[in-house]
Length: 250
Length: 107
Image 1 (spheres, each protein chain N blue to C red):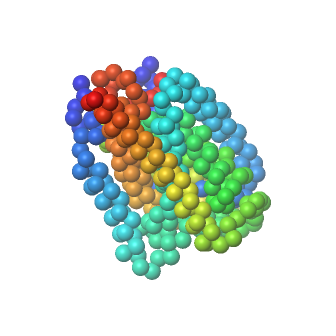
Image 2: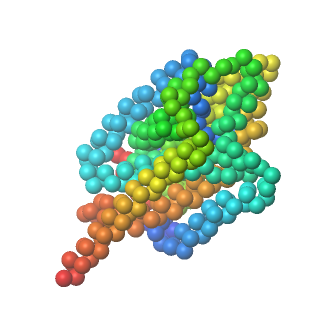
Image 3: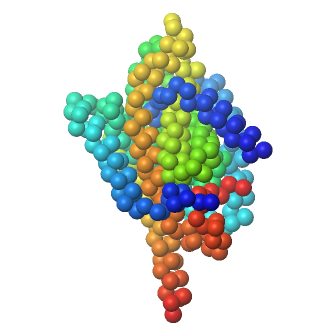
């Protein structure tokens, strides 16, 4: 069973990671045709509902995790507010969803990602209400799923490397999906999907790369910080559970 | 069996190295690309979309937009400040809890 789940993750990650390039930032308001907005909304909604249930279950099983969940959400808040200069001479921002995905599983992050994206869409005119479904799908669903899968695969070997790769590849996956979403909606009028994909990629591909590394490093930093307080957020933990790589996914 | 490399808290100086690399990654583009505009990459979306599909018009406008770049960066700073505040509050809370527990076990 465990083996089947991990191999599923590998397939999932390969699907989204093979052309290793990315696009930058959320899709702006009105910049996706209505049909596609509905499509991504319909695809994202079940994940958000799953996430809400997952949060309720996790907190019912262990109310002490409430603060850690708040911290994971706050981490997304900080990181997605930081517009960082990149080697392409333009700016983009990391997502911050990797940390929460590692700790609580991918479903929970669809809810937290949705909250942050709504905040940015309403108050900052960054992203949008119509494109919320598409942006939640890339940042709140695919990114966290990739992060979670990579962490689960590698945590036994080296927890820190696992956290770094999970966060940075999840970041790349998010922007990869964004460019895929734009390509699907805007195939080139003469060259079709491939040309369009190439155009999106060639302009934005490199922008996210250093940012993904930054996100990976910052996630490792916060993860090690958290590790020191394991006894505080989970009082009464048995001793051998205190020293291993940790996550709270049941 | 859990090896020492699997304990994320085992090496504190590594954290400082990580933060150092983050700062370097931030500074390098600024030093080596003095001519670059560093505009938001999402703003460039419009250009690409109009390249591949000349007829597309955005069909929905945001309900409210920050009236200027300054207000927008104020709101982004606020977002980061709220997040950082929550993180620091929680870590401080745990830190205090630990100190109190140590005190009471010593007494």
